[in-house]
Image (tube, rainbow, N blue to C red; front, side, top):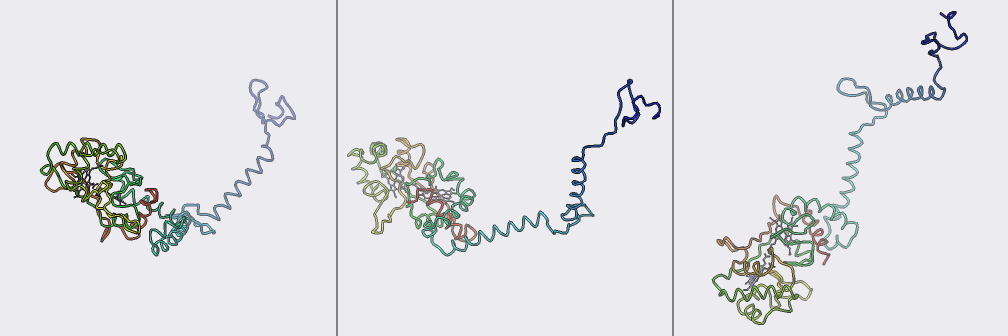
Length: 298
Ligand code: HEC
Ligand code: HEC
């Protein structure tokens, strides 16, 4: 064949088409061959060091003893150890002490976010922004007080505001005057309520729960704590029951809150999370810190 080769001396294979189209025998470049052998060496080395060839159920273990599961377990141990430090410290502190410690506070808030999502957000909305019929927690308006002790009391024991139904106590005209007065109060930050409304408010027993100032506060203790039974503040623009306004106020005055046997009454039940089989003391403490911080920290 070589003697028929029309291109003598050339490193072609002797396969020639169309007179001059031929296959040459050029080796790949040197750098390419180096890479080729290096990658084979790498594979051999890798399979000796790390788990690789499947043998039965398990791969060959590799002499380094590394595995993904072991690495995951080590990471998990680190996380648990890191959390244990925080959890131990939180266990021995009050909510106020945790709030005063920026690192611990951050940990408690992050951890409570999950608890809040699982236990509270169905009613209070994620992030505590409230839902129709459920109070907003992410503001500084509190029915029962926003100090940590009050928040803890609320979460552990639950709350159930009670307001008398006035459908048989007041005349229609009195209800109308009071509902208008409530709207005037909410629109003027408590300054513009009619005199007639104030008179009824003070003589029809409303002050027993809503306080003399109609702000829901019955008394203020020397340490700054407020005494309240959870009656709404009627001097701010925040409505406890949707949609707010004249009809809402009238409905509440007529039917009260949590009145048994009265279908139209307002429902306001916050379940208790303390006690057996519910949230642990530790979880409640973290939630107290979380809710306190949602409320702007007052
Ligand atoms: C079934 C619905 C529901 C769930 C679940 C719920 N709450 Fe409440 N929560 C309420 C209602 C209703 C009120 C208002 C009670 C009232 O008006 O007397 C309330 C009141 C509160 C208050 C008092 C607000 C104030 O202004 O004083 C706090 C704090 C609170 N909830 C926190 C929580 C936390 C934390 C969780 C989760 C562990 C939670 N709630 C779960 C319905 C719920
Ligand atoms: C036995 C206590 C009690 C009495 C008496 C009472 N209230 Fe209330 N009232 C409450 C409570 C508690 C709430 C808030 C309910 C809640 O959030 O759980 C409330 C809520 C309201 C609301 C709803 C406010 C809102 O933001 O939606 C209005 C309006 C109101 N009261 C007006 C009155 C008027 C007017 C009187 C007197 C005729 C009166 N209340 C008497 C306890 C009382």
